[in-house]
Image (tube, rainbow, N blue to C red):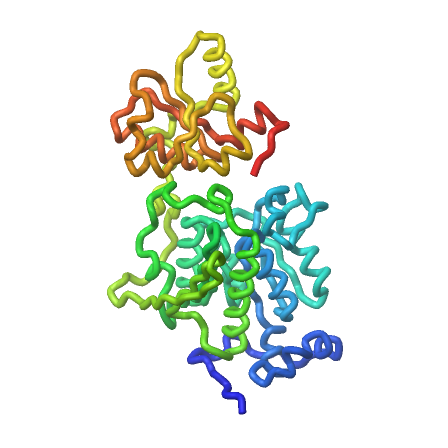
Length: 394
C-alpha cells in the first residue's frame, strides 16, 4: 500500500470549479495520481505563477509549468534571443534569434498548451516595479544569474508574503531551494552577504553544461507544483545540490536566522552587491572600443606603448579575442597572485566580455597602487559590435 507523504504546508491555491473534458484528457496522467487527483489539477488550473527570466532555467520551467496545466504564467524578461542562447534555452529556436525572449517563450508555451494564459512583463526588474508585478501572482520562480536580482526577488517576495522557488546553475553544478519568509528561511539566510562584485562569473562568463538547465528547471517546477497542490515535502529549509559530472545529488539544511531584521523595504541592490554606480572612483577610467582600436593601431605603428590585458578565462579567449591582448584571468589578479605580470611603467588597459570583470580588476589595480590603468567599456561585446562585427559573440 502506497504511503501518501503530506506537506506541512497547506495548498497554496484554492481549486478551480471544474475541469473541462479536454482538460481531463490532457491532464489525465496527473488526475489518476491519488496525491494530485482532480482537486490538485484544479488547483494548478487556478494558479498564477511568475517566472523571472526566460533563459536557461526559465526555458524548461516555463514549458513544464504549461504542460502541468498552471492556468496563468507570467514572464519577466527584457532580453532578446541570441544564437549562443540555443545551447541551453530550449524554449527558443533558430527562427527566434533577434526576437524578444518573452514573446518567443509565449509562442512556445501556447504551442504546447493553448489552454493557459501567458502574461508578459517585458521590463527590467528593479525596486520600482517588482512589488507591483509580484502582487498578481501566487508563486515566483527565480532562475536569474546575478546576485542583485536574486536579492531583489527574495525581498519583494518576503514583503508580499509569497513563496518562491530559486534555482542556480554554473558549469556542472546546480542548486534548488524554496524560500518563504512566513514559514521558513529566505535567500538572505543562505547568503547573508553578497559575494564581492565580479568574484562569481555569470553563466555567460563562466559557461554552463546545457543539459543541467533541464535537471534544475524541472526540479524548480516540481517544487512549484508541490507548493500549489500541497502534496509532498518541499525544499523549504533545504538546498538541493546537483553535480552533473558525478551525477550525484546532496542536500544542505538552511535555518531561519532568529536575529535577522524583518524585510520591510526594497533597496538599491546593485549597491548592496557592490556593483559600482556611475561616479565611483575608477569607473571613469574607460576607453571605448573605437578608442581602443585607434590605440592599437598607434601601438602597431610604434607611436604608443601600452599593455592590453584580457581578464577572461582561456575558454572564452579561444572563441573570440582582441588582437594584441595578453591573457591573465581575473581570478589570478583579484587573488593578488598575478600583479607581478602587470607592468607599472606604462599604461594598462583591462578588458573582459562585457566590462563587469574588467571594472572589478581595475578597482583592484587602483587599490594595488597602479595609477595609469583603464578598462574597455562594454568589453569584447562592444569590440565585436563596433570594430570587428564579423567575429562571433558568446
